Image 1 (cartoon, one colour):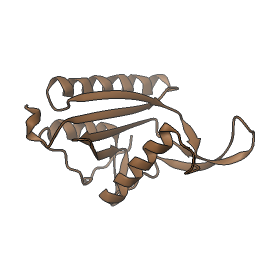
Image 2: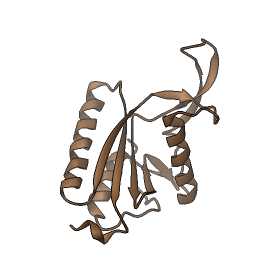
Image 3: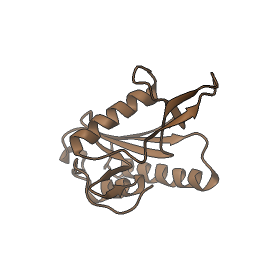
Length: 160
């Protein structure tokens, strides 16, 4: 399939925690292979895997890659009338550096961001109208809609 059927270069960024248990690590490897297969098939122009922390301080002034990425995802969710909760969550946790309680953003085990022509058009996992879309379902959606991925979440049933 020619990648000229959608507005511009399409790329995916696959986010994973570094401390995955064996079953999740195997699922990660399977998803990475499927994403590479989509690159080979011309559905994606590029895919990148980024390792992120399990949690980061939720302070909006905190300038970390994870916080910045979450802000980008939250902007997409507002535009798409979707929710990142409960997959991205804030909790009161003890800081490993200070030992004091602080609000932290807990990131999902895996997440996928899809960009078309530099614009974020899809984030998984997310919830919308009582249903959810997992990373696996998002990858399947990419496979089915090789020419143009819907930017508004569809109704799906399972969480990652």
